[in-house]
Amino acid sequence: MMFGNEPLGSSIMLAPMAEVSDAPFRKIAKECGATLTFTQMVSAKGVVENSFESLKLLAFSRDEKPVGVQILGNDPKYIYPAVKEIARFKPDIIDLNCGCPKQQVTRYKLGAGLLNDPVLLGKLVKTMVSASGGIPVSVKIRLGWDDRNINVIDNVKAAEDNGASLVFIHARTRADKYDVAARWDILADIKAKTNLPIVGNGSVFTPADVVEMKKNTGIDSVLVARGALGNPFIFSRSRSLFETGNDPGEPDKETLRSTIFKHIKLLEIEYTGAVLLNHVKKNIIWYLRYYSGINVLLEKVLSANNLEDLKLITDKHLDNIDLTQTDTPDVAEVEQRFRNKVLFWLAPKEVNKSCYQ
Ligand SMILES: Cc1cc2nc3c(=O)[nH]c(=O)nc-3n(C[C@H](O)[C@H](O)[C@H](O)COP(=O)(O)O)c2cc1C
Image (cartoon, rainbow, N blue to C red; front, side):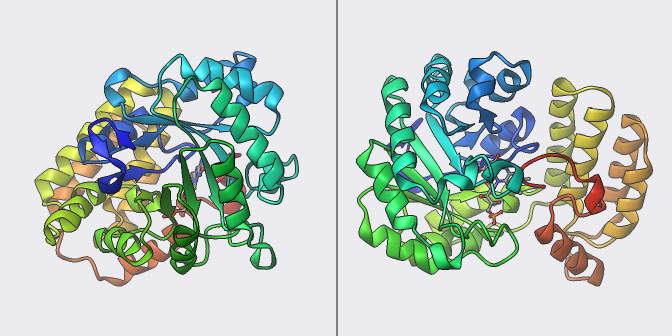
């Protein structure tokens, strides 16, 4: 299986992430070496009903390819026409979300709510394959609902038997959400029991993690999620580590600065007003969370109320920080908070409606 000119076996992919894997981030990730990126999840019903919000989320430009689209749905009545419509834009893969853990989603048997019903999951895959006009179809699943219901093999088989080309496996259960370490050992088990290409996901935060997950489990490729936030360099570094055994290391200051400012420029094309400011703020914080001084930066960024100030704050901070200072208490604390919640600076009640925050 190929993505653009690249075989699956040497691919490193950017995961679908609501509110994150927008066009600016996809472009940056691609430039840094991601083989495949995903647009943000869209509701199949929303696509069929021409909801502006849904159509906006799945839009991508041709130069972003290879790119995947992910849908949320459980009813062939919507899945079939939605996939037909999406196929017109020629994404490189169309994926079904079977992993969103939020109760507001699972209680309608959507997202991870599908995990307990491999028969329905298989039926949905079959529907997608019949509508996709030859574009590969995949599912992104978790290991199961909880520790007592690990049925990942049943779901992989259901996908395989119904024509899926690939399965993305987030190596946690629905009950784990994001908080516990992903169980890579189970990925090795699954790989041994299926012929379907498997892309592993979960707890991949460093280039060494990418290579280790792949080597230790035998899976075909790796899907990076939180590890890429503010860190698109993970793609080029992992690629180099994988191909040559050498990790070129953290970016130097000028690479970091130019990547951040390029990302901001792309965000300015995509968004305006308060929405733009929020996207810029969160990305600046993610990029600089690895370096000492992050607590001071957080305060300044969060209290800024225009783009010019944000750019000045970032530039000055970059001038002043020492990129070799990465093991300071503020960095360790922020990294822990980030792993618990990517928008770690928000109080729980401020966290928006997204499936994943
Ligand atoms: C902010 C955020 C948004 C996400 N949105 C989606 C999504 O829309 N669809 C999906 O399948 N997974 C989504 N995920 C899950 C990730 O794709 C991935 O499976 C998960 O973060 C585990 O990988 P990690 O431990 O390496 O972060 C999201 C995760 C985060 C942090």
